[in-house]
Image (cartoon, rainbow, N blue to C red; front, top):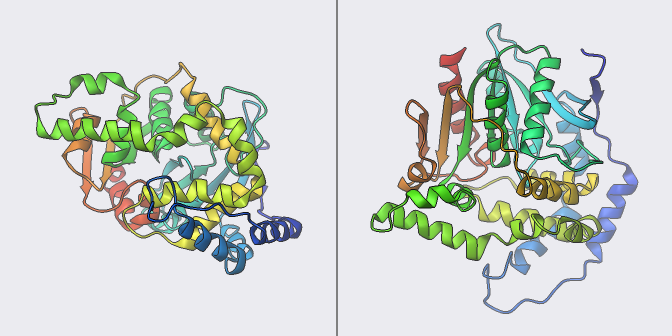
Length: 370
């Protein structure tokens, strides 16, 4: 092990657990217009249900014990503390695979995916994004996708991996592409996950995509409509975090119910298949106990104000599209030779929604690159 890498053990103080329970018990609840359902945000009934489960039934210590069975480490790269999992397969031909989560997620997203990938012959390196979870605090601006990609390439070199694959979704997909563009000499291939709604949301920030679409074509018209829906109905969380992360950070850091609602809304809205409630609350708990709601939001702010998107990758690429329909391929417009796999169900968090399918896709893509 490199001298700059230290083992890490999760151990949240008992006082923090008691404080969370006390805060949840004295939540000051807002009212709600009858019948409004999801039109103005996550419904009151849903948040109260999750908050009561978090307060009275959820067992952080059980989750902590389970997560501590995985090998955790920390290191410092470019002045920033970086937390990561490093889980090695027993197979002699194992391929190192760098997996990057997105927002509002964490390494917890991959808990059920990891055992399957180990059996399929992957060494796994799963970092926490700067400002997320145990990769905190962040003490200077500038941590966005390209700088993170450079840190990830340095991490893999420090671990001694001369050839590795990369995988990610959401922000993690952008970072994975940036790693491929930056460190193509060592990257065997890039695999990302997406869904038609994520593709439409991404396309709203890339004006040249809309310019290619023809409103007279039925598929293009649906893609344009989804982009418009995102701009008018679903982009509020980004508008706030891209402009005023510090202001919203007071609520995320002081109120567990605010942090709960902010994350649960995305998971409820962006999933198609059921996800485990305990895993969702574990992810939210990680944000709460580390106080990283605000620094995670700042990551999106930094990316929104960054001019550095990195070089395009030239290595083999693969896509897994969940909840697929014809708009995804039209919006993404993959290059010739890209491996493209579609799944009817699942959406933004397939590692939680459909881990077996995702593991199969990763094997199908990377087995030919070993």
